[in-house]
Amino acid sequence: MFHIGRVEKMVLPKGKGVVSADATVQAMVKMWDDNLLLLEVDPKIAKDIREEDFVIADYRPMSADSPNRKMIVTKIVRGELGKAIWKGFAKEFDKRKAKTESGQGAVPMPMPYIR
Image 1: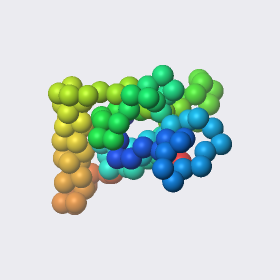
Image 2 (image 1 turned 45 degrees about the horizontal axis):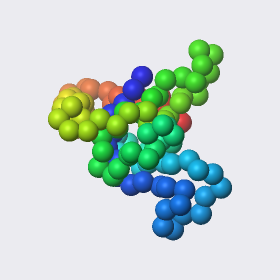
Image 3 (image 1 turned 135 degrees about the horizontal axis):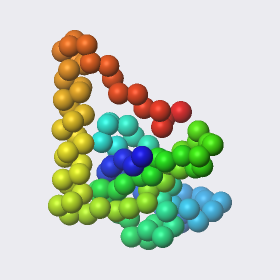
């Protein structure tokens, strides 16, 4: 399972106000479903990621037998493609949210990747 999100803030190992024990990069990502997560960024794209980029996070299980998820940003999707994917998911989320708020019996979407 993969999710689209938008980078709000970056946490760089040598960033201002950061004291780091390692060289990993994290991104504060607002997901399409209004969740706000702090995710690791794959080292292969860490130098390229910027605030306001659309990104894809890998939520697949770490292994077939593990309930733990990878929870890592693996792709940056800029330009029209990123906007289109974001808008598609946001539109669906808004429809589901409107049904829930109107009392039409819609059940909020489960978020099993948040533990």
